[in-house]
Length: 393
Ligand code: NZQ
Ligand code: ZN
Image 1 (cartoon, rainbow, N blue to C red):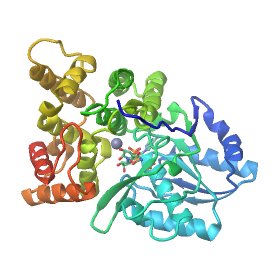
Image 2: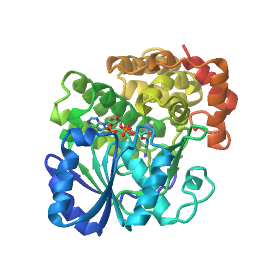
Image 3: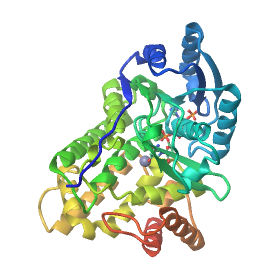
Image 4: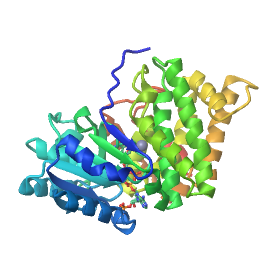
């Protein structure tokens, strides 16, 4: 095993009715002039934003509002948010919504607290040294950004989607009421479950440092999300299933399921980020669409892990060779994706890239990594292209 740091400073208020904790948490963490940041309007339609405003008004908080964070949140809105915060002397950002609103809030927080162009951090040119404090009211279980150190932003010029990780953006608090996720379209629920599982699978399929305790946590989380995703397809109002998935989402990406390993593989995510940047697809669906092709391309180089996954997560019988068991695990995962109406290739994802498009995707992906990447199997540009080709059916 490798040495590790485990740092999760976010205070989580979890369960029904926890929105009533908002004012107490804001007082605890010191926000006086707030930016309330949200997405395209789901929090208006659900009534959540109105209730938040009422609580802020009653408690005498000064705040400004900025909506419009779209899935694959855009850099242009981040710049707008930075200008607004500077003009209004904002000292705390409250993000209300899914991962896109929260990631956009983190980027705005960096932009206000550091000189220069905020994109530099996403472009790996320099490190942020500060971030405005962030609080979160989560409405979509998926990204884990409510507890994570990362945010993912898309620059419209060139449609470049990049992630940036830094502990200083970890939210001060996260209010997580599973009932908020009951208004989600089924597609977004399934995308979320896919993303949650992938955050743990990225950490699981590695060739370095794996620990039994971490594996046990990871496998338990994966089985839990798999079973509850199936429940939610049939019964979207099931509170317990919503709660299982919501808490799993945070644990999947606060690195609990990565302690001791070499940091994870992360190539399915990198391959998806290029699809999200160029085709604006939902992140979870993009992950499902490339995962099977990635897995078939790399599994022989990470066979013990794929075998273990097949048996302990997908319930494959221990019959046949290790390779046969591993392949059955991959097939079972794809069957699960279909069961929750997720795509397993680019056609099912709804895109039809040409050969030139695939080459562009692979090139951008390689450039974004700054070289070969992956732990299950390190991939260079030609490997990435081959995986996109395999997925393009
Ligand atoms: O924009 P609104 O109107 O709020 O609608 C959203 C959006 O259309 C809707 N929605 C959210 N909560 C809802 C709801 N609709 C009804 N009821 C609710 N309770 O769902 C749609 C998707 O929302 P979005 O925030 O985009 O989804 P998600 O949470 O999956 O975030 C996706 C973004 O996060 C990035 C992704 O790449 C993508 O850009 N990621 C961020 C990570 C991180 N910061 O650690 C890690 C992930 O791997 C991922 O890359
Ligand atoms: Zn993800």
